[in-house]
Amino acid sequence: MNGLFAQNAYLLISLLKVAVVVLVLLTGIAYLTWFERKVVAHMQSRWGPERVGPYGLMQPLADGVKFLFKEDPTPAGADRFVYFLAPFLSLSLALCTIALIPFGPGEISIFGRSTSLSIAEINISLLIVFAFTSLSVYGVALAGWASNSKYPLLGSLRSSAQMLSYELGLTMSVVGIVLLSGTFSLRTIVLAQQGTVLGVLPRWNVFSPIMPQVIGFLCFFIAALAETNRVPFDLPEAETELVAGFHTEYASFKFAMFFMAEYAAMVTVSAVASVLFFGGWLSPFPENPAFHFTYYLPAALAAVGGVLLIVNGLRYRSKVGRVVVPVLGLILLLLAATCALPGVNPVIQGPFWLLSKIFFFLFVYVWIRGTLPRFRYDQLMAFGWKVLLPVSLANVVVTSLLILLREKR
Amino acid sequence: MSAETVLFIVFAGIAVMAAVNLIWQRHPIHSALSLIVVMVSLAALYLLLGAELLAAVQIIVYAGAIMVLFVFVIMLLNAGEEERTEVSHAAKFLGVPLAVALTGLLAWRMWAFAPAAAASAVTDQNQTKMLSRLLFTDFTFPFEMTSILILIAILGAVVLAKREQ
Image (cartoon, rainbow over all chains, first blue to last red; front, side, top):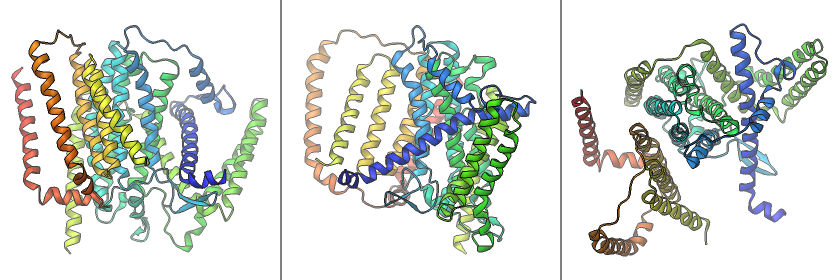
């Protein structure tokens, strides 16, 4: 057994990392639906999920069970193979991208072997991310076509055109980043963002002293909204016109797979945005001893959350809630204590900041959904080709000019 | 047999089978899907040769952009299954021997070239820089010519689309 482990250590450790990341990501996706419903509900003066478990916390689990046990019909005249293939394609491509995200600096050791905090280390990881994004249109396009139904077909036609148009803007908007850091590797891009500007601001690419990539970031974020088919670009599934767009004919777990693919794409796009423009795992505070107290921020946050849960939980209206919520609070307190341990504290800094940034972008996603109405189709196309693409091209030109001038000096 | 040989056989096999399937299938969408499989397995073969950039570009450009347009047009035109007729006599008695001859010739030449091609496999770590330098120095003229060709094609498409109104 020991010899077998030694021979295949790399493979086994990679499998372990994949298992951990996929487990966290899938749980995260499930609770992202809960989070979205709660936030949108509060924005519209409603309560959101409340009935299943305390604060509706068991709602994602109930939804999952429901999806598993629903009947799964195939529409008459559907292309069976492609109809089956489309949701798998969607979900697997959406999940693959997370493998390229670096979660932290340095190495950690598992079973005495050191390994980096990411699943795949490739020197052109940014291009591979775009390769996965460019393939993800097939899931939606094929789903609509294979259903043999008019609304899904219209939805998938819309989405193919939309995703093709916005992919140009998406790719162009990150060229500035590649020029600034001179690499396609996500890890090196993060490492190039260390340091500060004027001693206060972190030297992230949005605040880069050569050419702040604010415009690049706005272009990236808008194009990413369109690529993930989210409001205000959710025309492929516009329910007022197309019932549910490309997934109208899908039920049961195949529908759940489209649903999960959309939320997984949201998470990975947020992760890529934080890595490219907001310094990935880097802390927003400068690296000097005066700011070492910020190392205890994750622990402090978990402790405050735990205390709040215990105080509120003891007054919860249902009897089960009065037990479960304080227990959750105790678990959070325990987590806070673990985070404060000297051995654990430095290791979790990277993942903590990256996850906080991802969480922030996810909140913005939900916020936008609660705020903006849907585009009309001609507006969508005109915006993509006449505004987004020229602006991101201008960003590339200005950035490369400024870099050239700086090198000349 | 090394792992690379096994992977080569697997991906080359998938590529050839998908290419045969591309001709075999009757529905244009199924053929287009097979072509995507061919492109992705070609990208995997590039990866095995150590040409990472080429593999990524192959997927982004061919599988991710050009084939999406193909699928889009097939869906838009609502193309149905193709109908097959009996093979003509000319195809049977002239086409098949010619196809065999062409395959044999290609296989013979490639067999002769194989060692030389393997020796010149890319080993440079920073391929992106190397490729860009080559494109903008030694191959500037062909590179610019290609862009002009694409521009002409776009202009042609615009002219054709205008005429209909």
